[in-house]
Length: 257
Length: 257
DNA sequence: CGCCTGGTTGAGAATCATCAACATCTGTGG
DNA sequence: CCACAGATGTTGATGATTCTCAACCAGGCG
Image (tube, rainbow over all chains, first blue to last red; front, side, top):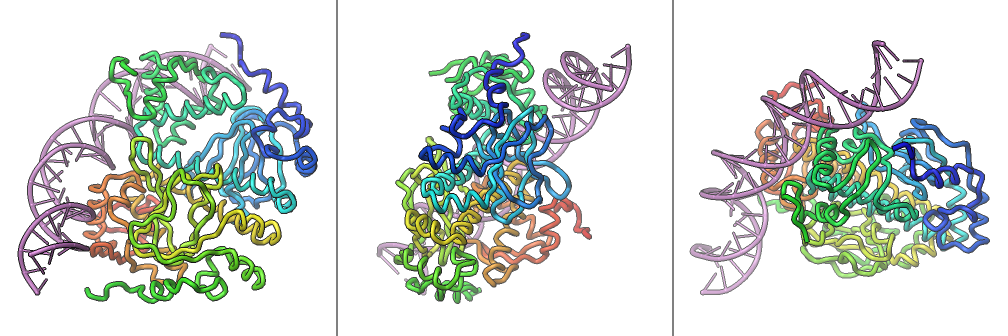
């Protein structure tokens, strides 16, 4: 109960923010993927690394001029946009190795804001210099096209989720998504801390806080997950997937393949 | 009643499918935007133009190897992906001047399928050659980044719509979106034909056909739009926007700013 | 200690889905 | 040109999921 967080390793290590791309343990997920080491050095030379951000600080604000994209080095962020009436819509959560801010390229202004959900560090990648570099390093250009394309493909999965799925399926899908993104970083797939609030989860998934809360307790009651505030343990990954796929429901007394 | 379609001009003209980018009336919306005329010629030289597709024909299928993106020259398309259970999710509608297939770049396979909603013509743009060309023409690279970024930003608008809006707001937003895309092509903003079925609209917006139908009739009853099958006339654009923005509802007897 | 934010639980209401019947449109073949 | 069948769209009655409103609880911080 007092092992505050199980990922102190990554947190600590990645807060050493003057590390280079070459030595970064996220290099295999992030922009440098598929680059030769000399090209990695060139990429490295355009990247700015600043002090870590504290919880609640913004990387950039919606409508601000767009100048750079950002790689998450440690911590977690939410991206959100505000409608005219001030209401917020969260469009994504971002974890180490993922790239933020690509929706701002389109019209030279950020289409959303990005806020740290906990103490976090980032690498700033000035976009005009990335463009120049991409023109000279074909594999970098291709890789950046791929990153943007994957962002599109992932947004469309979310669209499908919002359009077709029940509240249970949405929450189960989010848990699985976070789980797999943890696994990608060689962290436990089945035990992790949710950096965002229940309100954020509801906002992201198109549900109210109350519904999110109810479903967490329901999932807990059937032994699907263990919840302790933001700490989550997935007890039955198979059932979780079955719920996402629509071939299992929580009101049945736990019969599955 | 017998003026079959008011856009026979564009349809006819654009079906002249061997036209070059330089002479294409969509050049100011499509990829050539912001290119010098010599660069347009270079772009033009890599573009493939085939025979028109008939209603129901596919440009590409989900999971097929990715090789090209496609510009709509005439007609209209829907992009959709199928879940494992075969259920379909429409992720977008595409009109002349818009680019299709960018979600396939990410992992070299198409993440969705694209089907013609009516007789349509396209320009095929081989992606590897576009990449080469982009590396040599900085403004082309930048423009393609921008197109992808806008696709992301638009998907996120849809996410907000699905996450936060009522059925009425979703339909109103779709009508406004189609209206503005018509206007961009110098066609009437307030009178157009919906190329997709009610079922498609419902699928796209996360609603059932019945709900879509009911809302069309409700909108018609209050004098917001005139509906004749797929022909739509927007009678009160201001109110339509108010509905999207959530500051007007149809159950109030028509009081607005 | 007490406030304040964030989270949980309950009761009632509302929107939208479902099920079912019917209408209309399209295109095909007689 | 008409008749028909299948697909597409409309309308109505009913019900379920989720939202809303409200109260209450827990933890963190001044």
